[in-house]
Image (cartoon, rainbow, N blue to C red; front, side, top):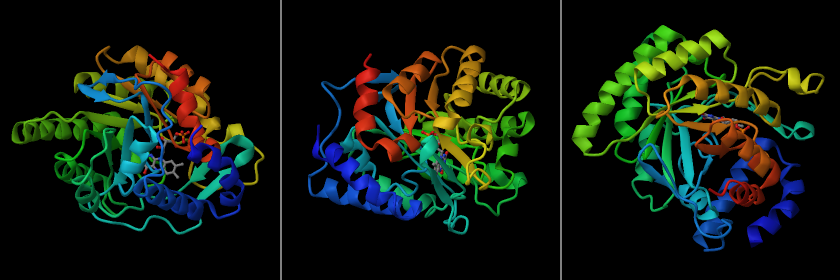
Length: 342
Ligand SMILES: Cc1cc2nc3c(=O)[nH]c(=O)nc-3n(C[C@H](O)[C@H](O)[C@H](O)COP(=O)(O)O)c2cc1C
C-alpha cells in the first residue's frame, strides 16, 4: 500500500468535516503539491494494462470522470496516481463562476453526492494553455459545454469554439449535453438538436484532422434520465453520424433511491451508488443499439472493483469514477485496476 492510500482514511474524517467544495479544492491542491514533491506514488498494481480504444492507447481502462479537474490544473498528479485517462472540464468558451454556493453536498449514507456546480470553469483557453505543458502518459480528454447565458439556438457555435481551441492538446473531446445544472442543456439531447450539433462537430473534426494531421475522437456524454424512445433516437443519430464514442452517464435528477434523505430535495445531479443501476441500464441499452465499432465509456456509481467489473460486463470498453473516489480515496483506483485486469 502506498503512503497516500494509507493516509486517506486518516485524512477523510477531517475532510468530511469541511464543506464539500472546500474539501475538494484542498484535496486537489494537496495532490498537486504531493506530486511536485515526488511524494505521489502510483497505486497501479503490477504491470500496466494498456487498452486500445478509438485508436488511442490507454495505459489502463480506468479514467477520472469530468468535473473533478474542471480547470486541467492537476492532470500530471492524476496520471501519476495511476489513472489511465483524465477527462478535464467541462470547459466553456468564456470563463464563468457557476452557481451560488453551497452547490455540492455529501450523502455518506448512500455513498453519493448532489451537485449543482453549473460549469464553474476558467474558460477553454486557460485549460488549453495548461495542457500545452502536459507530460503525463495518461490519455487526456477535454469535456466541452456551452456558457450558461448562450441560448440553445447558438449552442453549436459554443461547442465549435471549444472543439477548435482544444483540438491540438486533446486526445479526445467529450461533448457534454447531459449536465442537469445548465438550463436547457439536456434539451440538446432531442433528436433534431443532437443531429444538428453532432453533424456540425463531425464536419469541423474532419477539417481539423487535415489541419493538424491527427484524428481526435469525438464522444458524446449522455444523461441517465432518458426513456426508451429517447435512447433509441440518440443511438440512431450516433450510428448515422458515426460518433467515435459515447460516455454513459452523467448524474441523475431522479431521487427515488435516496427518498427521505434530508438532502434529497437539493436541486442538482445525484451521483455515486444511487445512480449505478440506472446508469448500467442505459449503458447496456446503448451497447445493444450502437454499431459494434462505437465504444462506450461507463461511468456512474462505481464505488468498488466489483462495480467496475459489472460496468465492463454491461458493455463498457473503459470506465470512469468520480464520487467513489471521494468515499474510498486512491485505494479505489488500485481495487478497480486489480479487478478489471484484461
Ligand atoms: C461535483 C461534480 C461535478 C461534476 N461536473 C461535471 C462536469 O463538469 N462535466 C461532466 O460531464 N460531468 C460532471 N460530473 C459528472 C461526473 O463526471 C460523472 O458522470 C457522474 O458523477 C457519475 O459518476 P460517479 O457516480 O462516479 O460520480 C460531475 C460530478 C460531480 C459529483
